[in-house]
Length: 55
Image (tube, rainbow, N blue to C red; front, side, top):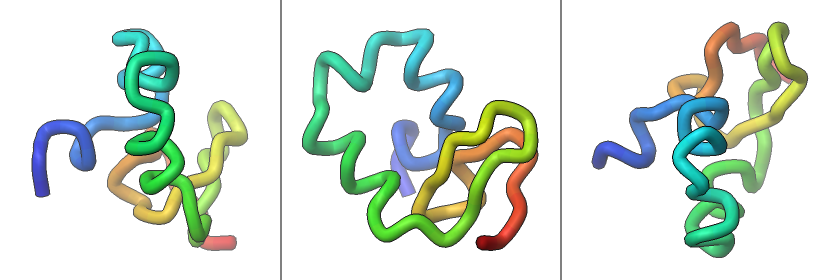
């Protein structure tokens, strides 16, 4: 794991990661296996969500 894959999607959004490296962001969310019960985002790993719940 690297720093990007260990951060939540919310933290990455605040850093501008979605705009700066869209392809890497897509890898974090596909295929989604969990969603965040706080913000509704979905991700391939529960580690990238603040309050993960399996799909």
